[in-house]
Length: 285
Image 1 (cartoon, rainbow, N blue to C red):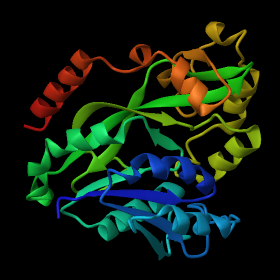
Image 2 (image 1 turned 120 degrees about the vertical axis):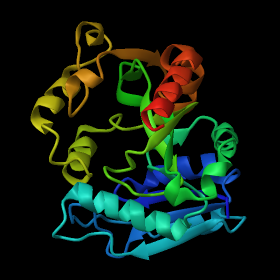
Image 3 (image 1 turned 90 degrees about the vertical axis):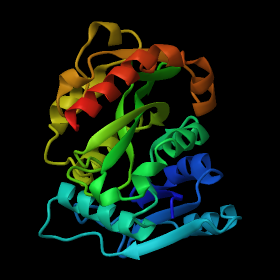
Image 4 (image 1 turned 180 degrees about the vertical axis):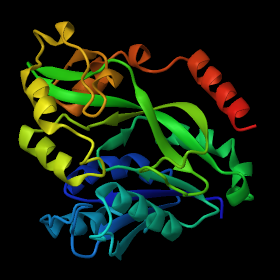
């Protein structure tokens, strides 16, 4: 026990796993890939899968770390977010309580997973009796908004991402509503830097499908570009004011963008991390 176990959910954007899995592979003790037995989304829609992906898994998994976990993850009587919670819980049980249970979405890419593991290991004592010492561990997401005009528009401040827990009592997606330990780790989140068709499909099939007004959001997403983004505000797809402003970085590939962005401007400060952890300690004292 006390292993680093990483779980991924396999869905319509499964090809992005070819980016996200290699970034955690070397520092994970085991990786689990949850695959619905009929290739259904949380809304029940069937998606097509190229068998070559599973061939890629076999070829890539040189250390035999990856387990394909097939199960029924769609219950018609449940809402999309309830199916989301249910699958994450079932996946974590498969991963094994008593280990660090890290869940990474396919479009989330760790900048330095080794550092995140090092930060987790500072809190291994929470794995001794996880049910009575429930915590979550947060990193921060750089939310990629739209490729345009030779570069990327992204949310100017990184947002919290709940990445790990010792006890998977999920209430909303990865949120267990227990004490949060904040870490200064970053991930790229390729959430909306897709085609319009891909975004619209995502809105229909993810856990928050009944919380989004796709028409008003898509109107803003389609209109924003390098020339006008500074004059526009409020870009989040559910509560728009949560993503107040965008920033722009040059680059048309992931590597170019990673090299050009000023991480210090988007990442939370050490003081911010310290203050959040003090607040959480008092809140859950």
